Image (cartoon, rainbow over all chains, first blue to last red; front, side, top):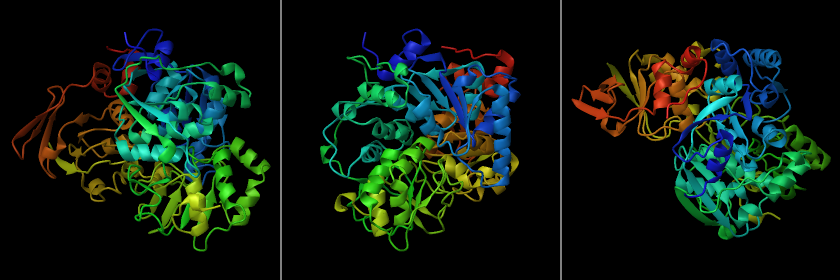
Length: 420
Length: 164
């Protein structure tokens, strides 16, 4: 028998029997969560289904992050309902200012080997912990909360074997953008995108998270990465050492597809509107020099302390170009505090930045930096669809925090390798 | 029978239920007025009960918002047909009792009159005199859709039961 892929390993352990790609199985859910955009419908569906209890309240979380603090009365009222229901169920509440659901879940809740179900597509970020983490709709999550389990079809796996050393100015965001550009937005539909190899082993956790986060932008069901020494270090840093365990695919696992990457020659990449697979190097004439009205550093993808460190290293002593504005939203309270303590808010504010409290803010187009008609945004987020940032007549380019810094300095899309 | 409303490839959940209408998510009748507005502004005001949304590749890509298939269904749409679907959207459709059918939609044109035979696995294009076939849903999903969605399924069974 062939060995198990990482996702087959995790789901087999949780199902209590060996399952392989194509099998349909019920698995216990180790962590379930909703956010303020999907939570109200989830809770109404629970009421409809007469699911009057939550199976694992201490592992069930309501995040108020998308419209937080509430920009409108309707959303404030939704949040009243969420808080009341959450308290009634004895669930965990991460209220306004806590940060983006996936970021906070990753810091404090997701464990290696877990099955994580969230009512938000970027739940896949939990895969970087060596977990099975996948986004589902409100009704599926209502069942997961109420019954403590879900049904799944075990996905086939596309394995990415990555080697080489990232050149200066090039990051995991560039690797995932280049990958999506190659396999396209439906290239991994229904599949697990599993990452491994020496360049992944050497990669810090906060960079791995970007790869898992954007699995859904290629259609992926999950983006698992083996749990290893770096996973252990990350958990220790979060006072969660006891939660570490090694989770790896078997040698001889059977992959549906394997792709080899060498990052040594990788360049900074940019995804042009209106698709995440519309990807070119930053040096391409179709993007280089494009006027940018708003630079946005935010989201679960690329607004951790480490991202803001990269951004500020380039930005230090510089000013945002005239005619361009810079909006920064740290992804979580932890990242906000670390950024503050490192003195980086001073760098950002002196450069001319506007800083939001932790949350999703401008990324899903609810508030906190909606662009105007005809404006161009360069964003460290994950989606550049028409209307994504709240205005169907604006245009979003996706890139790394380093490319965002170079762009803020020049006021047009610029190459971070040419700054400092 | 209903008419075909054609859409292209990669119709995202942002095109179906845009972020700028986020505040309407607990007011679904109002949200439904804006269904697919950024893809085709003529759709929501003119769609009739029994009509079909006909997409290309990767229909429903993007977010997990179940509101996207919900508002399509609230418009009276009989089914969504596409060459392929994004996975969360597809699962959401079945969960809310909206048939999502994978067929070669290149053969269907705007305004064609269509008939869906879900159990028989057939779409009949009356305008063209053409029959398109599709494989049955996996048993677990068929069981959920048969009940009219996951809410009714759980109300009936009180639990998840996987059919292999």
